[in-house]
Image (tube, rainbow, N blue to C red; front, side):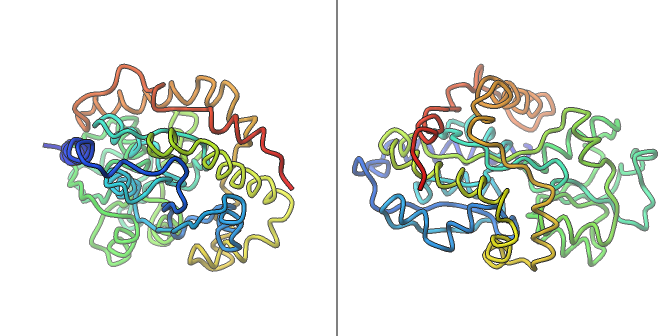
Length: 338
């Protein structure tokens, strides 16, 4: 049984158990929520997080909880511990929803083809010209994440038989440490972990080359369907603050980056380098055909079908449109900012 199949079974079991419990019941307007995010993954929203702007605009208490992977975010949302996940990877979202977890995409958090990749040990001298030499090697991949999807797509492109690789499920920070110690031949990850990996190896494809193959990398802001249904105005205000920070970052990056870097647990230089490779679609851009207007639905289904075709997920939904909801973002657009 593949690791994603195991994860799918666990998620589906949790969904069934929780659905029969009283865990999903709450007041129409929550007075406290928990929001998931990543360390070493600097985003403009963190300026508002540090300065209490979300709490001010929403009038509630917010608990911020850091995670290592999107699959861990999914599990926390199943348990009811997290209501909103910022920068939830699309692949772990797909795995969770396909397993029956009732989540919704409410926003595109960040697009980042350059900041998600796999790195091969330098001493192996393996490049895109001789990638088949990877067969038999030990590879660390955070299973069920955007990095896993990108890894599978790259291996497919190079004709590498994944069954002949020794794939280890490992969170990027752990993989970066193991890669530096020489116990891995290739490691996949993002953000700060990817930067550390690149100190000891090389990528097979650049971000631009991946995009040319249709390997997109972006994260979403996901929410539990129950939270979205019960607290639509609160969610719209949350998304409005996030959008305002993205817009503000375009004009005030110099002021914001030091705050973001500290909150992300990064040096100023590392945060600048990472942010330089990020794109933050505006609300108008997200509501266009490229995203919520059709492109997001099509790409989500393509990711699901790829996981099924490669034997990494048992089945896909016939349509993922039901897990993508633009109403909160449309409502956020109508909210006047100060």
